[in-house]
Structure formats: C-alpha cells, structure tokens
Amino acid sequence: MQTFQFRLKSALLGWISWILLILLRKLLATFSSQNLPLGSGVLEKIKEIRKPYCVGKVKLQDELREQGIIIGQSKIQKLIGMMNLKCHKKIRKHVKRQNRKHMYTVPKEVYKRPGGLVYLDVKHLLLPGGLKACQFVALDHSTRYLATKVFSRITSRSTVEFLGYLQKQEPFTTIEYIGTDNGSEFLGEFEKALKEKQVLHVFSSPRSPKQNPFVERVIRTIIDELYLQQGLAIKREELNIKLQRYVTYYNTKRRHFGLNLLTPQRKLEMLQLSNTVYCFPQEVPNQYTNVYVW
Image (cartoon, rainbow, N blue to C red; front, side):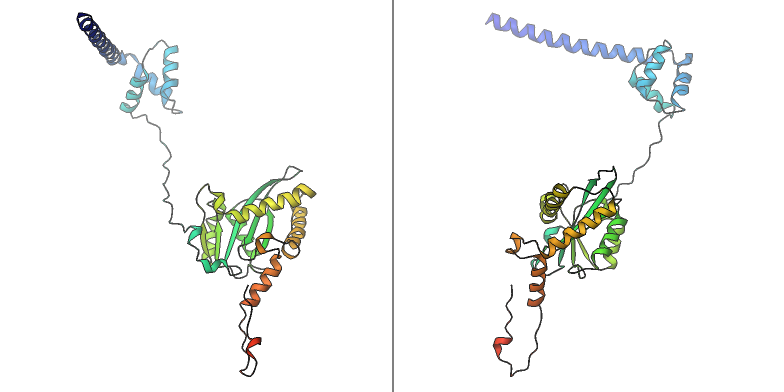
C-alpha cells in the first residue's frame, strides 16, 4: 500500500512539474517578445522588407536574423497586422452550383426513341507529329448510332460547332436530351445553344464515368478497332477522314451484340418503321394494318 502511494505521489509531482515548466516557457516567450526594442528601427525594417513584394513572416524572420534582430514569427505577424501591412488577396467569387438534372431523370420512353437521349464525351489525343487533338464523340442510346469529329481545342465553342455538325445527320436531327459529364466544355456557350435549340441537358455525377458507359465504351472500341490497328494520322484533317470511314463502317456494317447483332442503320430503320402510322381505307384487311413493333 505504501509503495502504491509513493508511486502515485511521484507521478503527480512529475505531472505538476511538467505543467509548470510549460507555463514558465510560455511566460518567458511572451515577456521576451513583448519587451523587444521595437523603437530601435525594427518596425521600419519590417515595413521596408514587407511592403514592396508582400514578403511572408518566415522570410522576414530570416532576413531580420541576418541583420542581428531575433524575433518570433507570431510577433512578426502581430506587427504586420498592427501596421496594416496585410497583402491584398484576390477575392474569388464563389459561384453556386446550379441545380443540374441528373441523367437518371430521363423518362424511360425517351430511351426508345431515335435521338431521344444522345451521349457526348471528349477524348484527348496526341498525334505522332506532336499535335494535340480533341475527339468529340456522340452516341444515340436507342440505335447506338455514332458520330465523331476532331477539333484542335476543347472549349464550349468547339462543342457548339460539333452540335451543329451533329444535327445535320440522322438520327441526331431531333435530339430531346443530351447527356454529358460535368466538364467545362459542356457549359457556357454550349448550354446557351441547347436552350436556343430547346434541347434538355442532363449530367452524370462528378467523377463517375460509369454513369455514362455507352459513350465510354464506344471510345474504347474506336481505340481498339481503329487506332491500334491503323494508327493515328499526323494531321487532324487526315484523322477526320479516317474517322469518317470508320463511322460509316460502324453505323452501316458493324453488328452489335447490344442490338441483337443488328447494325445501327438497320435498328434506326426498324424504329422508324414501327413509329409510322398507316391510314388505310376500311376495306383493306386488318392483316395489312398490323405493324410489328421491335
């Protein structure tokens, strides 16, 4: 019992002495920093070093030490505040993120219509000659119809130009929804163009390419079947010609497992046929009015 009491007393004395030592050091540091010879030109030297280029407290302390003045960084910071020598920082306007519609909000019936939902994405390319290229890719959900074009820059203006190129060909002439990621190339001028054309814009979640799998997969298909087999062109114009040949093959001849081994062209024709309304006279037998819907 006596041994335990002795150990407890020694432990308490140790803790008390440790706390007193810390308090003593703080008092000494405060006393030494508050009683600096500030009237002997220290303030002027701090102002002289600080003012032209907004030198920080660490560099200030180092320069003052070279001149024989020992002063702490916290004291330097206080003096900077007292003398109104704080740097003028650029005020960044916090832009509140707008409520963006998610890709999952697209109605199910839209997925079945050609041009109902079109996915957009961009692939960065480095050509053999050292040129950079940005390949814009569009894919229709219902028909898997592909369109792509190479541009020199990845900007919203390039995206608007690609949208104009896109809407000149089937089935992209009547786009209802466009699904993209949150890249800046799909904002700004591109969103304005979509509002003018009355096309709804939906987004995937940030850093979630798995939510936009169709266009991601077709980019990989282009890499595997075109770039790895035939290589990249040296110039962007040559690459666009090569891509258009592949797009023609992809849409008209290449069979897709996702379409039950149909081509996108054949799938588009079947959907257009199923959506056609036939108005026959009543004397025509009913068997001719029945249209098989795929």
